[in-house]
Structures are given as C-alpha cells and as structure tokens.
Image 1 (spheres, rainbow, N blue to C red):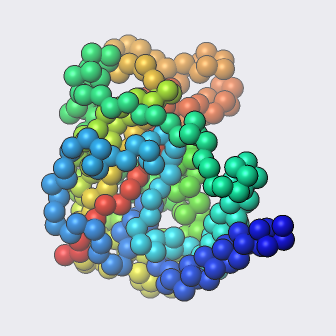
Image 2 (cartoon, rainbow, N blue to C red; image 1 turned 180 degrees about the horizontal axis):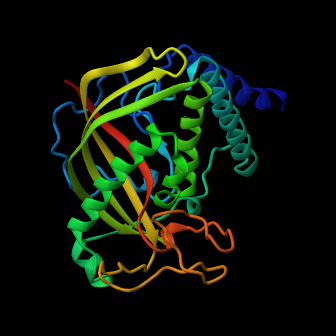
Length: 307
C-alpha cells in the first residue's frame, strides 16, 4: 500500500525537477504568447478550415483556459517556482483521486467530457438569423486590440465582460505576476491582419465558434524601476497566429445593431452596459456576459514569426 501511495508523489517530484530545468522567459503580449523565440508554422498563415483538423473541441471548448507556447509561464524566478509547485500539487492530487475512483486502473469517467456537435454557418444562421460573419470577425479584431490595451495599461478588470471567468482569472494571474515583478509589457504597432471563422458547434450549454486570428505587434517588457528593456524588442515585428474559441449561452440570439433592446440585470432588473462593466451599478451583482453575447473561452498560440 505504501509503495502505491509513494509512486504518484515520486512522479510529481520528477516532473517538478524536469520543469525547473526549463528556462523561464518573460511574459509577452496579453497571455504571454509572443516569447523570445519563433515557433509553429512561421509564415504559413493559411490555416486549413477543415472541421476537426484545427478545432480541438475536446480540449478547448467552453472550459476557459490558455494554452501557452513553449516556456511561456514567465512569472520570474520566484513566481515561476511557485507556479510549477502548484502545477505539480494539482497533478499529484488528480492522480490520487483517479486511483481512488478507478481502483487504480486509470479509468476515466466517459461522462466527464462534453460532446460538441459541429454545425455549418447555414445552421447557425437558421437558429440566429441576425448572426453576421463580418460582424463577428470585426468583434474579434476589436477584442484583440482591446485586450492588448488592457494588458499594457494593467486595467484587466475591463476585460471581464469579454471572457469566461476561468480565462479572465488565469490571464489576470499572469498580469499580476508582471505587476509583482515591477514590469510593464508594452504591445505597440498592433495590426489585425485577418480573422477567419473556422468552426461552429454546440454542446449541452453553449454555442461555440473557433477563429484563426492573425496579427502583427511590436512587443517588449520594461522594468518599471530602471526603464531598461528586460525582454523583447522595441523594433522587431512579430507576426502571430492564434486560435480563439468563443462561447455564448446556447440559444442566445444576436441583437440587431439598430435595435432598441437593452440587457437587464437578472438580479434587480436594472439596465446594464456590458461594454462598461460586468457588475450591476445598482445592486452590485456580477453579470455573466455569455448570457447576452459571445465571450472568449480559450486562446491557443499557433505560430510566431519575427521580422
């Protein structure tokens, strides 16, 4: 019995040792995707658009997490160590829990993962006649620019209405690490080069869209105390490709731009301005924006090319 209990702990310790040997890099752009090294597909911006090839619904739909590029935790030497200790602790307890539930055979509950049913754009428009591909692309492009601005100015609370809680909190923790290290990540000369909608689907709770987002930025991190550049470059341009997953509550309809419809607080009924805050100004209730519009659920870095 003791040996069985020790094995998960030894595995966790081994993983921690390996991770600590990986060099940490500084955070870069919102979420830390633009690191110091290029990765992925380089200048191949095309993407495939075939259902199932680029859209991994099983891992990225509706669960609200960020997939980092290589070494992108970037919380500094002290913060990075704490981060990996937390990761190892979580892995250790997950292994123990699986061992107890599955009798040690590693069986996974088949009902634990969500089933996502793919749909076509025509099917989506049949359910939501006011949905516009062009408006959705414009929304995603604007969200990208807004996200970088909030990240640089350290006003992350303004992104709450545009993200799932899990993603908002996860990226907020990364920004908090920058603030603790007394650093500012500057993202300048931002250009959204293109947005392609690559997948549509539904699970039991959400409507889901995946999009390929191609951007150009100049990205560097500066010490707040000395003004010295600690990572990145003030001149090098980075061309990045991301995969975004956006969700909204299943059955939500797109409101026409000229419609005189106003969202109301489900707690007190007061009118809401979801572009301004995720909190009701009258009763203080936190509003889940996905009940009214699309929000970002997951972001995955696909490739980076530095020019």
